[in-house]
Image (tube, rainbow, N blue to C red):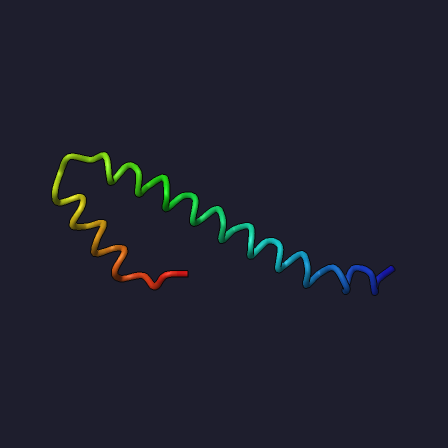
Length: 57
């Protein structure tokens, strides 16, 4: 039975990593929609700095 756990452990880690990456992207999209609807120019400038400072995944 121990070998079964050792077999599924890497798969579980992979699933958690993929699932958390999808949640992060969804959260950034919601934030992007909020920034897009904001009338203040400084918010748009800060958003562009944030987007340029992080590599695309």
